[in-house]
Image (cartoon, rainbow, N blue to C red; front, side):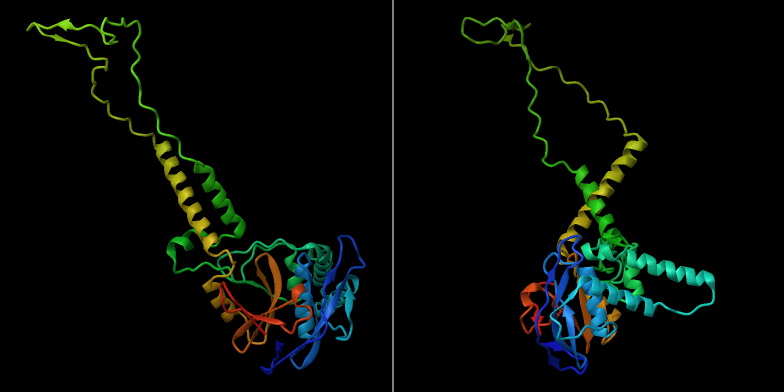
Length: 341
């Protein structure tokens, strides 16, 4: 079943799995027809290693009705899919202008966009920024999403009320946070050094007495008694430790800062390993409009996200659900069980 714009559910049909090898231009996607907005719409599904950025974009465009494939078709070829998206790009970005410079910029943007399709086919490196659900490090590949009018959102957002964590994570990207962790680990030894063994007094040329003792012979005192000389050095007054140079003190403070920030970063990454935080979920609800579709990035994977009647749903495109009724997964928990519908 799948949510419709009228709040009812429907769906069914046959499924689609990517059948593609690198360099195989005859690759194809099988199609799964679902009910959406009162229409019968085919969606693309993928296997574990499929090109999820391209599928996320194409599924948004299919559900919007921006591109069309007949729902009775069992599959669509990769080249045909790229041609459909390419035709949409030309139509959506064909704003008439008599300014030659503007026309040249539009043509260059479309050319740059089309040159990124091979990258979308293999996958896409995404560097999220933890300051907000719309924040990413911008790369050339993002132009495809921009020109297709498809927003990219994520839910990996730091809680700004947590001053310590927000002070470290702040406006960092994922890669910058990993650098903090690596730098921290480089200053922390893997294992603590073993305690130093106590110093031993060395005695040479000591004659063994007739009693078997290796102690030196006693000597006479003024009162006629005898005593054994001590082997320990005479105590001396401890000299005051010199104050560390200013540069060393500054260096120590810098090392402590690096370690502190690295541990905070490591803790944040560990506690938010699902790549979805409570604040991120709140921001997704407030950022996405009702009946709006977008590309959603989580766990190094692109999917299609949809908001209907105040609820968030992720389009189910996994291979295991090709012949199942489930079409949407409700996004309402950070971890644990999810609701399929």
